Image (cartoon, rainbow, N blue to C red; front, side, top):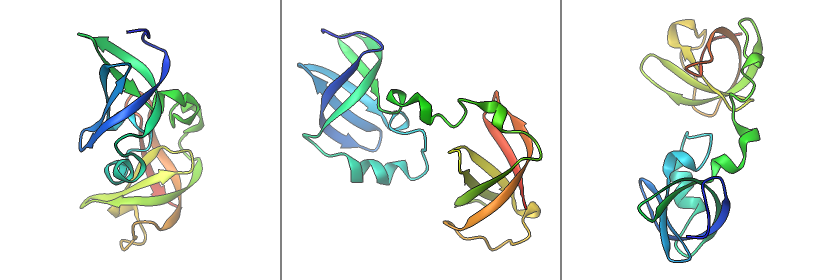
Length: 155
């Protein structure tokens, strides 16, 4: 193995499955877990099957090595895309634009323009019929940076 943790290497995709990518570099087998593909994990399973296929070559950052195997990450190559890299931008009372990314029984998950995902409780929503993909302006009600958690209300 001629690479170490922290190196960015080009690997060949050998298999794509629901847990991620099986990859190889110079005969050394590795894996890129599905959660290590992108900072935005909404719809990641579908995106993964659309974006990757066998024989593709992709750059990964080596994040672990054990027993002559390695684990790589695509998202860690792009730390500037981390939605929580600057948590001070998330303050109670601040307004953000977002997109409804998912509906749950208790509320809506709103992907903010920063990439962070917030929760809009249905009881806080003036329009309880929001649709996935709809644009909405929200106001941050509470922030917990340690959990990367935002609660918002509709503006």
